[in-house]
Every structure is written in C-alpha cells, then in structure tokens.
Length: 147
Length: 147
DNA sequence: TCAATTTATATCGTTCACGATGCAAAAATA
DNA sequence: TATTTTTGCATCGTGAACGATATAAATTGA
Image (cartoon, rainbow over all chains, first blue to last red; front, top):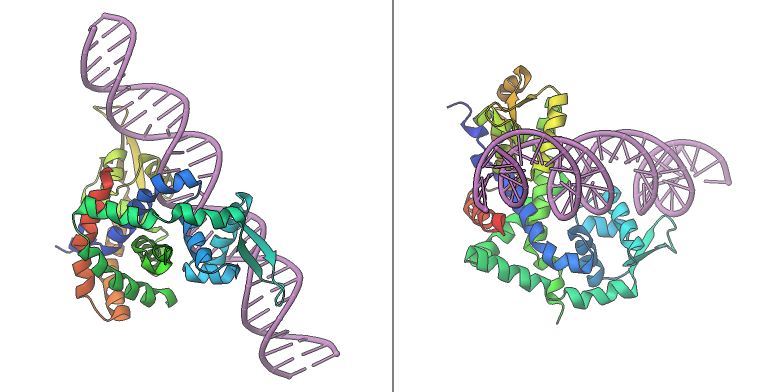
C-alpha cells in the first residue's frame, strides 16, 4: 500500500524519541532526591569533568543551544549548584563554576550510572545490544549535528 | 578512577536524548511547510492508521501521558487538523477525528519517512546498523514503559 | 439503590527546547 | 583609527513533557 511508510511501527525516530523519554524517566528516582533534573545532571557531568567553563562550551558539549542552557544555568545558580561570573579576558563570556554544593553532589551521584545500567540490564535481560548501539548513535549524532 | 562512570562519554541515555533531539530536528524541513510539529506529526500518524480514537488510545500508542496529549490536540484542533467530539457510549471520552485538512495532509506527508531515511543513510553512510537498532530500542521501550 | 472507587480527560505549574531577536563586546577590515 | 561584522550571551514567545490536582462520568460493591 502507498501509505505503508506512514505507519508508526516503521519509524526509527519515534523509537529514539520514546526511548529517550522513558530512559530519562528512569533517572527520576535517583535525581529527585538530589533536587535536580536530567538536563541539570548533564550540566553537572560536564562541570565535574572540568570546572569553570563558559556557557558556550557547556552548550556545545551537550549539543544544545545557548538559549536553552542559559535559563538552565540560571535555575541551577538559584538552586546554589553553580556560580556564573564574568569572563576576565573576554567579558562577554559567563564562566560557570561549581559551588561547594555542586562539588559535593558528585559523590552523591557517583553510583547513578551503574544503578541505571543495572536496571536496564535487569529489565531487558541484556547488555551487549546496548553497548553495540553506542557507536551507531554516535555516528548518527555526528552526522546530524552540523546539518 | 572513582568517578570514571560520571563521564559524559560513557552515558547511553545522553546519546539517546541527543540523537532523538537531532533526529527530530531533521524533520523540520519537511514539517515546517505543513505547519506541524514532530509530536503533532506523530498524532497524525496514529490517526491516519485509524481515525476516530479517544485521547487515551492516542496517548497510549505514543507512550505519552494524557496531560501531554490533551493540549497537543487542542492546538491541533485550533489549527483545523482534528475535531474532538464527545463519546457516545462513554461521555467522559473525547473522540478525536481527522478533519478534511487532516486527511489531506496524509498525501503531503507520504514521502517524509523515505526522505528522512535517505537523509540518514546519506549522512551516516549506512543503513543496516540503524535497522539493527530497532529491536533493541523496542526492547528498551517495552521494559521501561511500565516501571 | 446508593456510596465508594475507578476512569477519562482537563487544568495548573515548572522545566526544557528552540527559533527569533536584541545587545554589548570583541574581532576584522577598510 | 573608525566602521563593519562576528561572537557570546540573554530575552521572549511557543510548544512540548509531566507531576499534581480537579472534575465529572462510569463502574463496583456493599
């Protein structure tokens, strides 16, 4: 039939969209006690790897626009997780740094990744398939990020 | 090191989240001319497969909550794509049906899936890997949808 | 039959996500 | 150096997502 392609079942993007939402939902039990959201957790991951970064670098690493990240950081500043200070060489920049609270949260978040992967393995019964998916997703992301 | 797991590079969910966002972005050139968003396109896919469904059925097929779908449908009704009428047997239900405009859009959207998959193949060079990803994503979605 | 519970949808508040636009500082160039 | 362009970030508006809550209708069960 002519419209076979328009069946929901055939759509890869729908699966990515759904899997991403449901997986983010699986973080709730771990992030709610910390009082942070998943995108905020991602910002913390970036800053835990390297503190004191301009907004642009954070946005770039998360493949987000700065107009998404700026309000996110404002909320995180209000929550006492980060500080946003003026750049010294380039005063247009806002350098984002972790507060004491933001630094300390790293230890509390340490186990989250393994909890999540344990959970996924338990739910789906397998691990290997997901590991195999990673380079494919990277290829997709890499290909789509410019265009 | 103790915090190795907290590296962004190691996160599956981050890839899903990013790949989903970027893939949705790739729909823009095709959906913008139709004046619809990606979630609205998903609702249309569901209704094109079967017209006249209650809100709950649509939400269930998209793995969304009704409090996400209701405003979505209200916007689509305002755009003249669907009509929401009271259920006859069960008056609590809202039966969502396609308008003439909504039905006609199907023909205009017919080529979108193949355009997208062509684009992905062109960008990433391969097809097979993505096909192989589908059952894995289905397993993940199936496992996460209840818990 | 009538009260208690469940179900279907809607509303509200908060947080993304992003296109469009604004603005000041830096860089490029005439 | 003066002007133009670019860059970094912020603001605004719209549309998802979703938890919490509300409400009316249907169902259950005492």
